Image (spheres, rainbow, N blue to C red):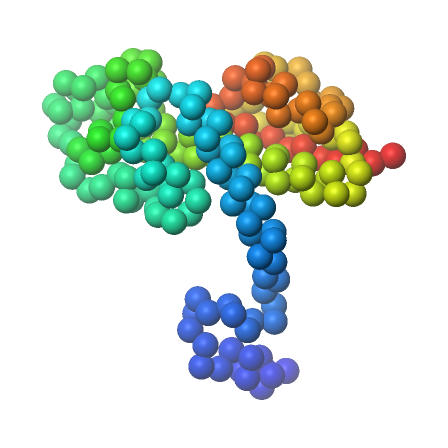
Amino acid sequence: MIGILKNIFKNKKDNDITDNPFVIKASSEILELQRKCKLRAFNEEFSKQDYLKIEKIEFFKSFVLGEIFINSIEGNTVLSVQEKKDLGLSTRHKATKEILDFLNLNNIPSEKLKTTSLKKIILNFYNRVYSKSNYYFNFEEYKKINITKVKYIVGVLETSCKWCVENDNKIFNVEDFIEIMDNNCKCEHNGNVVMAEIK
């Protein structure tokens, strides 16, 4: 058995999964659908906010698509405690000069600036897009097998808003759910689960 495993991984780099029999590779159609769902969610969420600078939209789009990492936005020129105080930022969290170029601080509530890191504010946007794109992707797959209803499962997430908690285990139409969620959910990013309702 050990000999078989050695032959499988022989002369392979650590990150080379091309011929790895234990890795399930997504088809090009699936990857393209995932990309379309991410772009759709990104465009919708970006148009609803005003704290991420519009001139940096391509950077944020690349970040959401996984083409660049958060360090490309965050940079490494750390602000001093006094500089953070002058900007009304939390002195407990790291902040960099580079990340300031991506944010409209005047459009972020002062209380949030004092309690949340700038990096987390951007990551919350990323997570919101990621969760929404997953809904879009799953719903496209559900439609292929004629699933028309889903159950919304909130679980025990302490960050869930009042609307989410009140609608835990509620059944929604696939076609309506995302619009209803957009109009009612107040979570910084929605990390709850939507499951196919099969009867």
